[in-house]
Length: 274
Image (cartoon, rainbow, N blue to C red):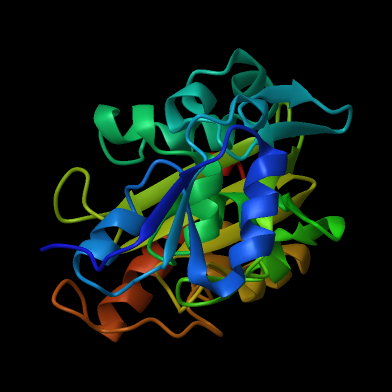
């Protein structure tokens, strides 16, 4: 398949990318690793008039200690997040989940920010950042703003980013020594998860589900049950409450609901919930 015609501009810095977005707005798309956007363009499900390549932008690739959180540049490659000693110590759930993304080729080219901005509910990382209670930083010509992960994912392949905003940073709280787990079930290695679960436990428990709705969703009913003293097994029975999974060639709605209950129980047990 051949994409529709488009103009191309390579940004040399975050400021230049923001300026280009300000000029082109709705007509522009950001190209980072390209693993999500280019297939959509080839199928003509996305037809941007302007493609802004931010691949060469080095000032958005970093992993820094921010005091009570870890700050990660939006263009940090999956492999860099996966192998970061700082993240392995402070946010091991994220480092581990990155190791489950695609294959080595994808992890060496794809970016954390690109995965989050794409907002695919079947992707692992949006649910992980949601479970961690992360914050995303967006920049435009109007300035900078922070968006809680719970407010960032607004619909299927839709986010809270305005057309002229660039995702620049992801901030995740530190969870050294916390219990955590990442579970997913797929038919074949490297397939999208039929259902996935990210859980972190450090006093309170954060749980988010992959592919159980049009966005990544918090398993709020499970979190509330645990807060009320329920066992992991009992709380996990509420994993599908409030979700809206779809049926497709891989699974029926009922099967996804069943998987959610099973995987949440496994996640809670691994994370140390009683």
